[in-house]
Image (cartoon, rainbow, N blue to C red; front, side, top):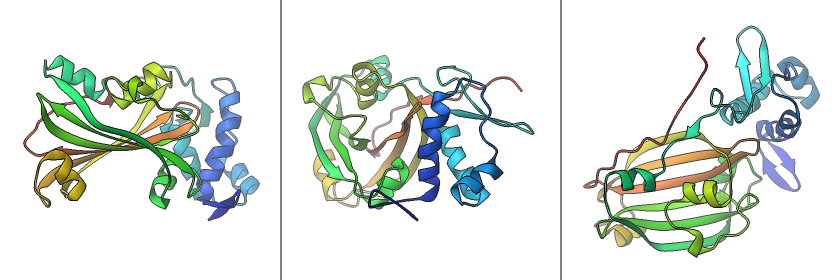
Length: 245
């Protein structure tokens, strides 16, 4: 582990952080320094360098060409970026369901190690924690807890939050989001879930954890959704658009 400004940060995260600024300033199509040279520069293994480059590939900042190396991508080209195509609020409106938010709160907290590692920030860095409960036709269906990089979301006003967090980030803060991933699993409701969703502790819930990045600035947020099992909502969060081989 490397130390940055007194905090612990994985070495691949530091490499990605330094390369991000250099590559973002380059013109689309500019070759990225070969892995072997980067390994010597940072005193790291090629595997660690490859891990750092993979972060930039997921952000849409770098593209790889088999047998040719890595290159600066056009971050605003639909060919190279995972676009967020529909937020939860947009899809809910399409289904004609009445939806609203409750228990909306926003506080600054220090990132735990798992959160900091995903967001590629030093452990203990302040992040914005946004919690809310979404209702459908007056019944609570999902409890949401997001951790957002405070440097990219320095202020937060509840009256700005009209539909969804993704809508807010894109429409109000004008952040260009690219999808990083979504993982789903079955969990048991904890006490906070039970109180917010009107279920008993231990009730089965669906957990969906979404991670998003900002083009050129790296990972932005971790947003975790705990859905009641008796609600069904079909979402197209995003799709990958790639050039033909």
